[in-house]
Length: 130
Image 1: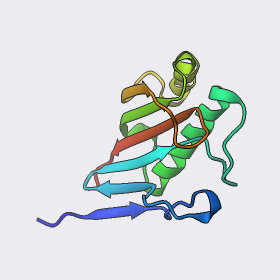
Image 2 (image 1 turned 60 degrees about the horizontal axis):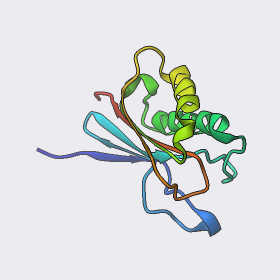
Image 3 (image 1 turned 180 degrees about the vertical axis):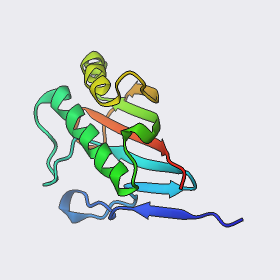
Image 4 (image 1 turned 90 degrees about the vertical axis):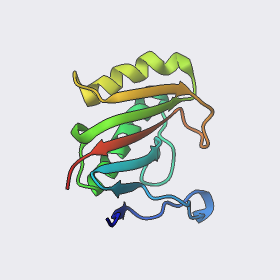
């Protein structure tokens, strides 16, 4: 049996043009694993505006990465969320509901210090048979 792995997207660049050693998304069989997304705009700057604006930007970034692998939010089966501040949970949760509706995937949500200056990071796993 041969394992087929497909990587999607270009290797991201961090501050100062340094290449970051990860793929935005990787398909392994019928599953697509998306690297954690933050509220980074196209120009590399973090979205201003607090948890509401950053959650929306992060979710839009998740959608873009999923699209690279021909997936949508409807294909997502598991989400992991890191929040910088637990007081942001209910605001985040309200916006998250806008994206996933009444049939959300399984989810974990924890508080963590972020590696970049943002309030949220979201990682998803999608299931989409080939």
